[in-house]
Length: 114
Length: 110
Image 1: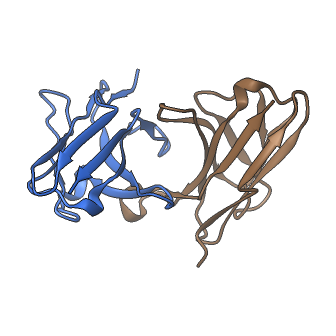
Image 2: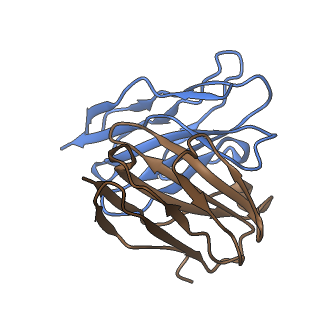
């Protein structure tokens, strides 16, 4: 099992550009999450999904969109990149009630907006 | 509101010394508390969860509801313990959503 995979690992965007951060998990987890981590700060939840076709906002959703068409994939879309979106983005997944609700994380995507 | 506070951004101790990473939380109900760890060049991974009351890599953490704390402790630090440690809280109504503290970078000096 690859677990949770994220692409790309690094990306530099210009202000106003758009991009999609990809996240895939092969553990058949129902729940998936997107977090961002700013320097010196903890992880903050952007969006989450409890199953295919169901998504909901987290703590910091502004400027982002998500979709969940399959159990495996949970892409995060930035439509108009802004310098405030410079961060490290982590995708995670979990299965309700399994492993005491442990979340499994991807390696992260480091995004810089200039 | 749910909040997790880790008061120390940096903590440095010598090998063999005791380690305590502090975590305080704010939550009106009965939370689930976790410690996650990120070693250099590795992904974030679960270290401990309060509900299982286990000891992992010599680390333990006890949930103190009276003091709303979940401090992580190890009696004798090892160099391989150097990492970033995050305390996290899941409220029972939270659809498994986690609220993370700011993290503590632990450095074990030889």
